[in-house]
Length: 255
Ligand SMILES: [Zn+2]
Ligand SMILES: [Zn+2]
Image (tube, rainbow, N blue to C red; front, side, top):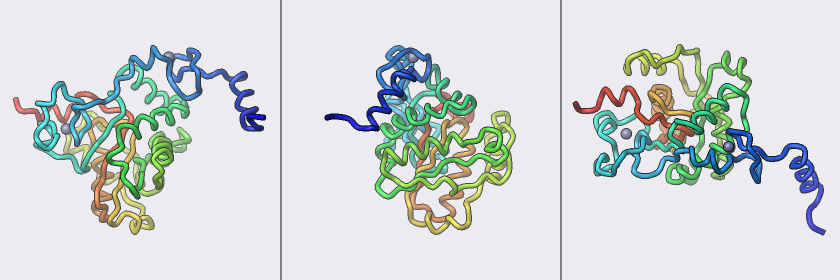
């Protein structure tokens, strides 16, 4: 006899809740995925992309010998490498926004699968997976931290440890987009700290910081600096979505 109670309940669930596309709701063959049409509108990040900011480039000539775009060559981010699963547009943007604001927590495991795919070379043996923290007021309103859901998903699939309480957001921050690069970094540097009790875990360790989105990089910079200050061997960044053209990068581009 094949199957047991588990497969019975799985079959029952399939009947009660047939698998639906995470984006448009069309019927699909298994839970936690998107339909073929929506998949076509997902823009996966593929080479060539910048090693440090994960932004795809139109041609490999845009990257220097070290794999960096011109903006990252001028100002290398605080972290080492960054990897992003998708360009933050169209279906990927919707999946990330709904994870963040519409309680669509099932989107996290789908996004995490694709983050692991692109993040193979930073998810090294014994690396520690750490989510970007949210302030407790926001946690109270939303009930969950979308970055922590992604970090748990990534760590589970990669066979690594996730430490969700490593970093703490000690004060809420205003939306940062309107500030200058320096003002954003100053604001975030004071808002994010390392939990003192977790400091021994960081020393000499490769850390992968996980967030839903890489936009200005101010939050990730504060996380990376806190971890490097505590003695991390390396800090990499793994996100679900990257904004194709970052405003602060545009300002740094040679004219
Ligand atoms: Zn669909
Ligand atoms: Zn770059």
